[in-house]
Amino acid sequence: MADAAKEPAPPLVWTKDRRTPRRQAPSVDQIVRTALAIADAEGLSAVSMRRVASELRSGTASLYRYVASRDELLDLMINEVHRAEEPPALTGEWRTDLGNVARQVRAGLLRHPWLGTELTGRPALGAHSLRHHEVALTAAAALTPDITLATRVVHTVLAYVHGATTHELAESRTQQRTGLTKEQWRASVGPYMRKVIEGGGYPQLARRVIEAEDTGPDELFEFGLRCVLDGVGALAD
Image 1 (cartoon, rainbow, N blue to C red):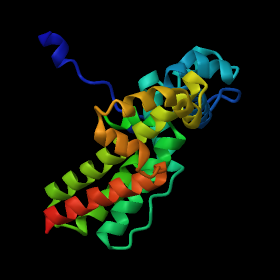
Image 2: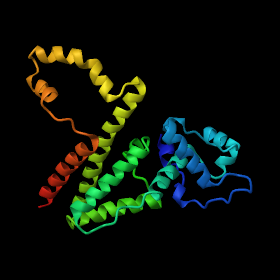
Image 3: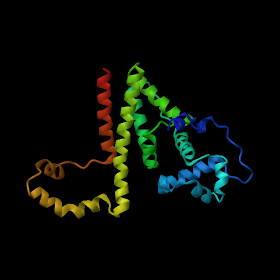
Image 4: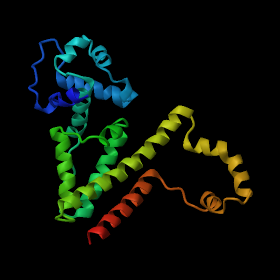
């Protein structure tokens, strides 16, 4: 174990010189875009070097000349997602700017359902990913000059966004798995819920079912975001 711990880590994809593909070989951009299309359509588990090579009608070995591993490919995919999304313009008003950052992150996670689990681990270090993080930190810096507090604010806002979008995506996956829309599911459990409510054991749940207004995902997200921003604003004050 001690010897393994001393082994140098493999070089980061961002520090490598890129080979120029041979005339008929797919470029790195083609490889990354193809992997993105597979992940968006079928999930990240469907992405493999062999599958990408098959889609490009290329040999798997030829891809490894330009992208060393699936992990390296994943880093490039995340950076490509961030390249395609221009960070929101900063106004200098922290609440507006952090709100816009949060909305853009949510939109990206909904467009790329596989992305959330990858961004909640180690930070993405590609140039385009770093640019987005710089914008988020700059937005928080308008709230506080304390970089530690600004970092915690960004982390808190993004943690909320990831949690909220995970809930949204779970509903989509449930619909795909069951074949039932939210309205059809409610109709199917209606008779059971009526018996539960009539039993009188859950008065607040009964009020929620009977009296509460339905809240759409956009409205619910904005409510939660407002609560988070109110909280970090009060803490900074």
